[in-house]
Amino acid sequence: MKQTYGPASIKILKNSIEIGQYAAEIIIDTIKEKPGAVIILPTGSTPMPMYGSLVRRFEEDKTLDLSGIIIFNLDEYIGLTPDHPLSYSYYMNKIFYEKLDRIDKNRAPKINNRHIPVVNKGESWAKAAKRYEHELDSAIRINPDKQADLVVLGIGAAYPVKNRMGRYTGLEGGHIGFNEPGSKATDGTRAVVLTKKTRMDTAFRFLNLRHCRETFKQQLTFEVPDHAITLGIKNILQSKKILLLANMEEKEPVI
Ligand code: F6R
Image 1 (spheres, rainbow, N blue to C red):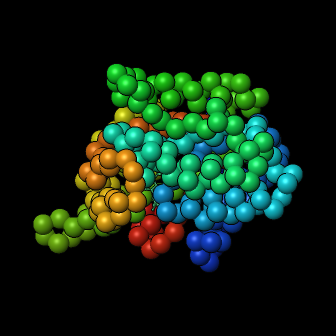
Image 2: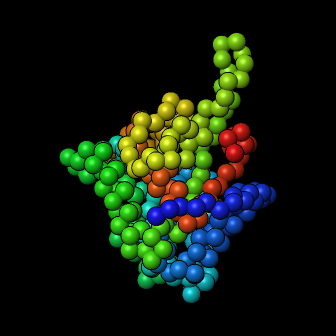
C-alpha cells in the first residue's frame, strides 16, 4: 500500500500527568471508534502515567471495552525472562494487564491479543524477530484498514557529543523503540545490539534492582542486556496514527 504522511503537529503539555491523560484519551478515542483496533505500545518511564490514566478510565467507564483490541509492544530485551522485573513483559503485566484483569477480565484485552517479542527455547534471535513481525503483519492483514490504527512511542534521551577539540559534533542517543539514529525507514523487526549509551541509561535500574533482590523469589540477572528485539521504522511508519511522547529536558535536543 502506498503510504501518505499527514502533517505532524506538536502539543506542549504542562507535565507528565497531562501527557499521560492526553495519550490515554487518544487511545480511548481510537478504541471507541474501532473496537478491534491494532495498537502498538511502548514501555519506559514516560508512558507510565498514560497506563495509569487508562486503568482509571477503564475502572470508571464500564462502557470502555478493550476486549477486541490487539496490542503489540514495540520491543523487548533479549536474555530477560518474562518474569524478570525489568523485562518489558513484566512491565506490561504489572502496570497494565493485571490491573485491567482485576477490574474486569471480560472487558480487558484478551490474553492472545497481548503481543510482545519473545525468543522461544532453541530459536534464533533472527527467527524470533521475523515471527514477531509476521504476527503483526497478520493482525494488520485482517484489519479492515490494512494498517495498525495507532502507535504510541517514547524516545531515548539524547546528549550533545563533543570531539577531542571540545566542539559539538552532533547528538548521541534518541532511539525510537530500539531503533537508533541512522536506522532506515525500510528496517523491519530485528534483533539489535544496544548501544553503550542506551545500556548506560538503563544501568541504574539494574543497580537499583540489586538493592531489592530479596523481594523477588526467582534468580535475577543484574547484567544490563546487550541485545533486544525491536519493531523497525518500517513497522512504525505503516501505522495510521503515530503519537510520540517525550518529557524531561534530556529529550529536548532530539525532539
Ligand atoms: C520502550 C522503548 C524506548 C523508550 C525510550 C524512552 O519500549 O521503546 O524507546 O521509549 O528508551 O524511555 P523513557 O520513557 O524511560 O525515557
